[in-house]
Image (tube, rainbow, N blue to C red; front, side, top):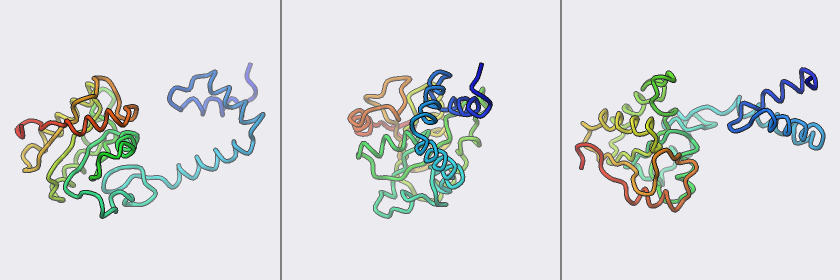
Length: 202
């Protein structure tokens, strides 16, 4: 027996969060309603505002409140290097390592035909246009070391292999199956330092 349609809907809505099951969603719902109504209202306001105001940067596809995000507008960043990641969480992990100061391009996931994610769905045509127009000297493939991530990196390397820029891949310290968003800063620093050329650039 449920608490009623309003509470049941809130519990069900919280289950969209990763790692949140029925019991966790129920516990969070009851906590907010019984002990922190002001927190519930703040959460509702913040979620509504974010859903309305946050879009994607027209240049790098990162989450942004502006058409062009602050990192793409930052003239102090290295214009010659672009790091390709799968998600905003991967970008944040790299930024927090303080080892990279170039530009980014955020794919909307990795290639996965079974899940309906092809080149167009993750933004590869936009990536190709950006690389061709910007005179970038090095492309760092920082997709996750998963089967899908490796396939995506290989596809991009093949696609951009005719460019004169160096194409490298993060290597040391990243185990197969891991995700950049959960890798510690020291490991990421080692991965950037040990990146290797890809395909014909070896």
